[in-house]
Amino acid sequence: MPVLPTKLPNTGTTIFTVMSALAAEHGAVNLGQGFPEFSADPALLQAVTDAMAAGHNQYPPMTGVPALRQAVVAKLNDLYGSAYDADRDITITAGGTQGIITALHACVGAGDEVIIIEPAYDSYDPAIRLAGAVPIGVPMTLDYRIDWDAVRAAITPRTRALIINTPHNPSGRVATSGDLLELERIAEQHDLFVVSDEVYEHMVFDGAPHESVARYPALRERSFLVSSFGKTFHVTGWKVGFVAAPAALSAAFRRLHQYTVFTVHTPTQHAIAAYLANPAPWQGLSDFYQAKRDRFRAALAATPLKLLPCEGTYFQTVDYRAVSDLPDLDFAKWLTTEIGVAAIPLSVFYQRPQERGHVRFCFAKREETLALATQRLQKGLRG
Ligand code: GLN
Image (cartoon, rainbow, N blue to C red; front, top):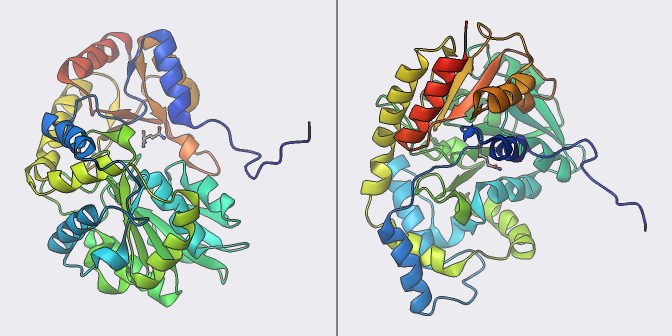
């Protein structure tokens, strides 16, 4: 057998798979990997069945079902004041992760540098490396705000692109208009592309707006906006998302998309297109998760864990240093095997692991699941 070449020699198994396996093995409540525990709206499920029965079972256009691209454009342009065109600027993808890797391949190449804000979602680093480029991690401030001075200091003549993520996984922070204006200035000044991961766009709390790159015309012109339906409609396993980008960027994106993915599951696209006609499901999502966040935080307040801010997403980050001196990966494993609650350690989201004693819980779970988890934490953790 020849030696297997690998473009990712130092990459192990994603932390989400590792912690889910450990949770299953030990019967722990899995608040690690982020996925909703609720079933999707029966109307959405029925719409997929209806689309299949109606014969929507062959390849859709390479760029996606037209009705879905039109529904996406209507929502984006209405919410963010953009002027995307359904035919030219929108491509339906196999989830956000594919949108991100294909966007990166479309805009960076060998030797280019791409800035990622750390903690950074774990697919960014390998996606950049697979494109032949170099990920440059820029840590957030200690309270998980984007450190724009540090971003500026990291820019070199080789910097080609920057990835932003708001609402932010894993910290639960939400970018402000000030952040987006800074990003716009920096991107223009240094002529950078922006890949904007907005998959939690409909989970923003306390009345704050979602600051999409689509709201900022100069930024929009150089951005690949990536989002998906999995989080919004409780169907993360469907792996259907989209990329919105101006014509030239979308053309470059599609050149790669046509030969790597070509297109995604037809009936699901028809179903989501029809379902998007009713705005109530996504309009109600922030309130739904905000109520869960509040109940979850109230229960965690009765433990020695220190709550960090949660402004968006379905993730709550905590500081456990009153409980344990373990490094965060060891603590997350201990919590899973000994206390029966799985969490995600934050150090894995850095190039140079930062041991800050922080782990992330996912609260997209039924109330009885969260109650069981918080009872175990209240009983098992001593400050
Ligand atoms: N996005 C999910 C999370 O942050 C994980 C998805 C995956 O398992 N790859 O938990």
